Length: 192
Image 1: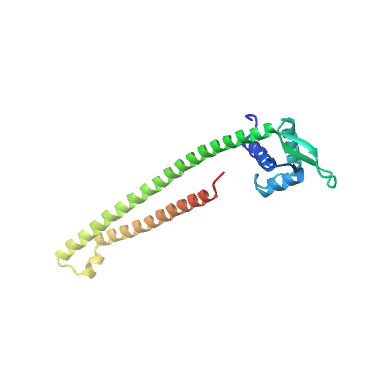
Image 2: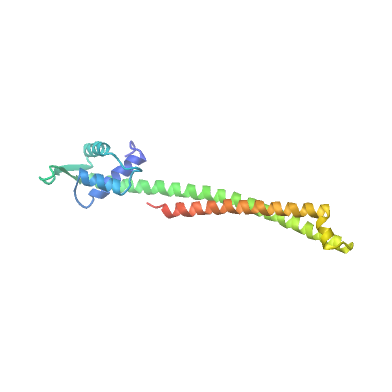
């Protein structure tokens, strides 16, 4: 089994899953493989025929006469083929588990970076707001009216900075939400 790629193992496993309960013709196997989307974009008939021949040579399949009307060959899984299927499924589950774990850690790391950035900007926004409110109280204590306070240069700069940080926070939140939606979409389509 080690000399085959994961794609080969998946294809062979798909053929053997189809043949597990009984036999099937090359046409039936081809329809099953392409209908189950075992390979992206399907698999051409010639490639499947070559693979079936290789599987027969490896002792995973036997051939017999199919229906006389179709003039086709009937393929059946051998005990060795069923054993191969069991080992292949175990191997694929292991690969899936490793890939799933790695992707989860990658996604967590990506999310934690965005979440840390968001928390940092929110903290900056709170600090600027506190400075702005402190400046406003100071100016009110000096007897300035509210209209004059809004025109005061330091207060105006703090207000601009707070507005800028609000915009940055919104952008980070959008980026975080896109990542979360992507993960949710990927999780919905995952499985073996």
